[in-house]
Every structure is written in C-alpha cells, then in structure tokens.
Amino acid sequence: MLARDPSPPPLPAEGPIVAKPARGNESYIALVWRRLKRSWTGMAGLWLVVLLLVMAVFAEFVAPMDPKATDVGFAPPQLPSFHDKDGNFVMRPRVYALADSADLDPVTFQPIVGPDYDHPRLLGFFTEGEPYKLFGLIPADRHLFASMDGQPVHFLGTDKFGRDILSRAIHGSRVSLMIALTVVFIITVIGTTVGMVSGYFGGRFDIWVQRFVELVLAFPQLPLYLALTTLIPVTAPTNVFLAFVIIVMSALGWAQMSREVRGKTLALARIEYVRAAMAVGATDRRIILQHILPNVMSHVIVAVTLAIPTVVLLECFLGFLGFAVKPPLISWGLMLQDTATYSVIGTYPWILSPVGFVLATVFAFNALGDGLRDAVDPY
Image 1: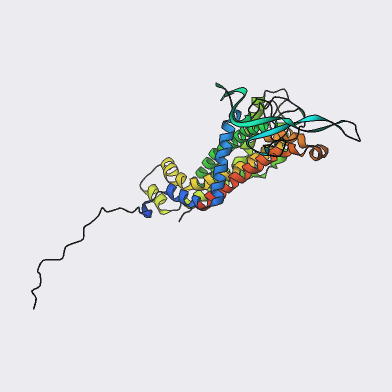
Image 2: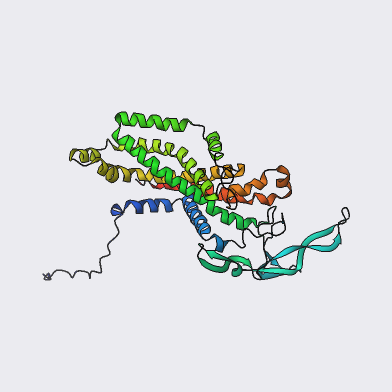
C-alpha cells in the first residue's frame, strides 16, 4: 500500500476581495433616483424641465433676435434648408428670405412673393447678432443659432408688429416660469406649514383652521381672479401689477396644499416614533421639523411638480384675457392675445406657436410629477 501524504493539499491563491455594494444600505434619495431612471416618461420630463429652465435663464443667448425689434408684419416662418437654388444638397443650413419676383399675379396684378434663392442667408451656431446684456450685467453679442450675416431670421414667423415670435416666446418663458415657480413656492410654504401645524395639534385649533381653509376653497376662483386683478389701475407700474397677480394666485392656491398635508400629518402623528418622541419630552417644534416634515416632503415634491403646470395654464388664460402681464413684459399668455380673432388664426396660423411652448411645459412637469409619484415610494 502507498503511504498517504500527511501534508494537507495546497490552498488556492486568494485574489483581492471585491466588496459588492449592498442595496440595503442605499439611501432614500438613491432609491428614488434609481426608480425614476426606470421611467422613460419621468426622465423625459426631467430633461425637458432642465431645458426649459436653461432656456429661460439664458434667454438672451438662446433667442436668435431682439424680441422688441420689428420687421415685416405677419411674415411666414423661414424654415432652415439644406438645398441650394438648384436642389443640390449642401452641408451648411440656410434660409431664403421672401422677396417680390418679376412675375405678376393674374388676378390681382401684384408681384408674386416667393423665396429669394439668389441671396441665401447662411445659419450657424454661436454667431454674432443683436448686442445684449446677459443677466442684465454682462455685455455680449453671441447667439446660439442665427444667421451668419446678422440679418433677421424668423424661424416661427412674426406677429402683427413684425416682432420675431420665436425670440418673444423664449423671453416669455422667463416671465411665465418665474410667475409659476414663485406662486408654487409661496403656496408650498404656506400650505405645508398650515397643514402640518393644523394636523399635529388637532382639537379646536384644527377645527377653526379647517373651516377657514374650506372658506378659501369655496370661493369661485376665476371670477375672483378677474375681480381682484381689475382693482389695479392701468397706469400702475408693471412690477406692481405683476406682484399683485402673484399675491392673488398664491392667496387662493395654498388651501388645497394645506388640506393634503394635513391628511398626511394626521396619519404620521399616530406612528410609534412620533409618540415615543412625545413621551421623552421632545418639543412640538422638534417633532414637526425632525419627524413629520421629512415624511411629508415626498408628497409635497410631487404636488409641486403637478401644481406648476396648473399655474402656467392659469397665467396663460389670464394673460390672454389681459389680466396677468402688461407690456413691455412678455409672457406666453400675453402673446396669445393676437389669436383672439378667428380670421387672424386662419390667415396666419403661425401666431399659435406659443401654444407649443405651453404644451411642452405642461407635459414636462406632468411627466416628471408622474415619475416622481412612482419613485418616492420605492418600497
């Protein structure tokens, strides 16, 4: 018999131990982000919101022209083309301005207006154009996309005064989004505070607060908007009128947010860790700020993303009626005043272009809100 080797077999060489990330230790924000990335509509809404905010902040740079500069009234849109006058493909995009041709209309005997193929206007990125001050401080003359020779180009046409619709819509996004974000911020602060305090203390205080909330909710908002906005004289400064509109929207919009937060607070006030904090003598302020507020923030964030489109639509509606923004400010609602007559819409349909910006904004925030609503409860 063969003698067995008493030495143990050699152990395999051990490589470096790679620690796998434990999903159980993932933070709440990481969990929400991971769930949000799975929703393509939520991510599309997030990117659209980012693009809209960047466009509003850098409106002077993004807009191809000065929004107050005038040209031919009701000029049709000039679409970029990659073909020359002979139909050959070219690499550099260009537009062809409208000009009177040598041919006459057989009915009106007026010169036929058509594209001027002999004088194309080349387009490019980061081109020189109308000078402006970025953020009102930094002088500059570069635009994101415009004509190379500095000539006016109207990608979405012009309005009745000959002003570029695209540039006005880009600048109008700043005012419309500023109104929406300011109103929603005020609504969120007041509504969240009142809702948490009312739901936490309860009793007679909660009863009286809720009766006042119901009184605010009972007001017919649209007639009240129109009545309150007409109190300011037409000669009032633009900033005063804008501030009054923001205050009116905020005063009538916080009640619904308060009611929703109160319902969440009533449920949270009965949870064990809140009762334990009460038992050990924690102050009411500490319990509200440290235990209740973090747990209602997920609902508040979703409510904010869904409230912004509502305020944008309300501002556009009031602006269309002439009760929101006054010139020289520009907003999407104010631009839609040109669509008040059906004959103008039928003849010059491109003046409805600001509606596309409104629809994109509403879709962006609604899609982001739906994605966040599914992501804030990752468990």
